[in-house]
Image (cartoon, rainbow, N blue to C red; front, side, top):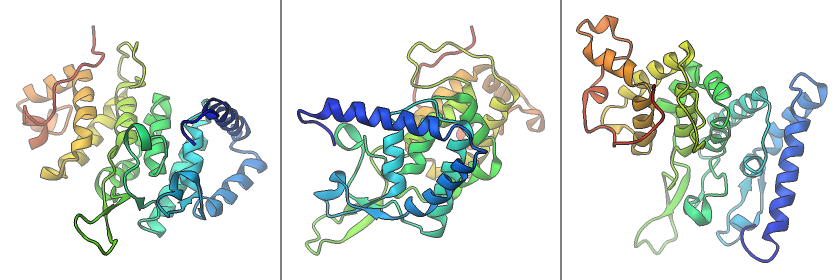
Length: 277
């Protein structure tokens, strides 16, 4: 629920529930956690009626409501976030289109609902750069998110079609969580931290940068527009590495993959991000 005289009370309740969930799932080796995770694998794909979908004659699945709630909490165990995201990816592999709901859920009025719970979970990870790096340090996960995943998670009404039919398409906040998680994983900085300072890069940060550029280069002209700004921030943050890469004559010795996207000066917009002093 958003807006109205009781919105402040609801917000307090949501925060309390989310923090309780974070505390309860902190021990990912406990029998209780294993039971909770197994139960969520079933409840997470069941359909439920919610206020957010009532006017759209739609029903959300459990994982969408869970991740929406989780955005109000903090202190989640890294392993819990990794397990949850992997389980949701497994669910969408089994049932392509499972997250699709009618109309957009981005922006001021709809962006609060995690209609794409995988992207929502990645957004939560972005607040902990170590967790984001551990998750995106997997080549299999990076390849899936960049190359294989179907990001058409909303159903747009066909323009001018009076039959009430819909076509799958991108949401207004397409890949927003993934972009922020990618920034955190490659720079070691929470992109939502307005007072962030430059953090020396680890080997893991640099490896994830190479992995991301390598997989994104395979997309060619299909480079996702929603990732241009995050990648611009990442490349500015890794200025020395990018300079060394572009200056190296021997491509085999370049610290970053040499691709058409990395050579194009107009591929990314200008941006400001913490850089090396």
